[in-house]
Amino acid sequence: MTTVYVKEQGAMVRKRGERLVVSKEGQTLEEFPMNQVEQVVVMGNVQITTQTMVSLVERQVDVVFLSSYGKFRLRLEADTSGHVQLRQKQLQQKDSGSLALPVARAIVDGKIHNQRVVLQRQVRRLETGGRDQRQGEAVYVRDRGLFERSLAGMMQMQQAAQQATNLDSLRGYEGKAAAYYFDALRSLLDRGWGFERREYHPPPDPFNALLSFAYSLLLKDVRAAVQTVGLDVFMGFFHEVHPGRPSLALDLMEEWRPLIADSLCLELVNRGSIRPNEFTRTGDKQRPVELGEDGMARVMQAYGSRLGTRLYHPLAGPGGETTLQQAIVLQARRLARVVTGHDGSYEPMRAK
Image (cartoon, rainbow, N blue to C red):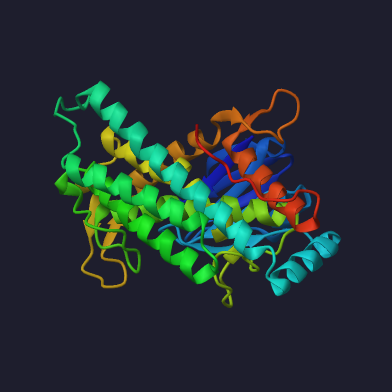
């Protein structure tokens, strides 16, 4: 199955028989068999015909609209009224408060665990690989002391989070763990990336911009998984509920951030697939740093490959093997089973 990214500005997407065709000024750029398309992602100034949108939605194909720089705008979906009972239970659980804290604790525990695993894996790769294969430059942990202190701080916050008695304190522990985590990431990056801390309103440096783009790609897929299962994407347990905020998608995204987005960014950086000089300093306060189209295409290609990675998941059926993309859906189903009372507790996805 294929995710079709259409980022050529001024392009048109239409259905021609049983094929999805992307064209511009009368010239066909790409075409795909409709029965092999799983998701269509339209970026920026791209048109898609009404007939094509209807046909895709009827086939349960995701149609997602992003800005030209990757920010989520909207997603088309078929009628979800068949999930009304699940959403009623979700609202009841939200109102009672009995489910929010245990689910949120599990999410935070899984996230910090996965962050620590990603950091430890990265250090092993750096120390065993020794050199950047493209330029022959030494690759190493710049500040071993900072790295070790950060790992220890994360462990302390993970233990404290497990004992949190309310959501506010849990969010505090998660925030401190994240600060330690990004300190450790900083020690793994060349200074040319200009990364000092995680900042995203707006990203002030190339690595923050890279992270934000990867998170935007991930959010569209987690959001789609939540809506596929039938849960209300806006009714979260860990993230506070605000108008327009997909709080539940942000909840379930947490355990996947390090496993999919962060590890992908580190891999692109350390392999030399993306370099700081490919980002443009715009002078615009709203978007001071931008990645060009070629760089975005490489990130999207690598992201798609990452989602195709196979792994074990207990809900995947015989053998338990599935793709990362399907595992995101299975995690949403896990939460739905907790909401309905079929399972007693939520089990986050944990890296081995």
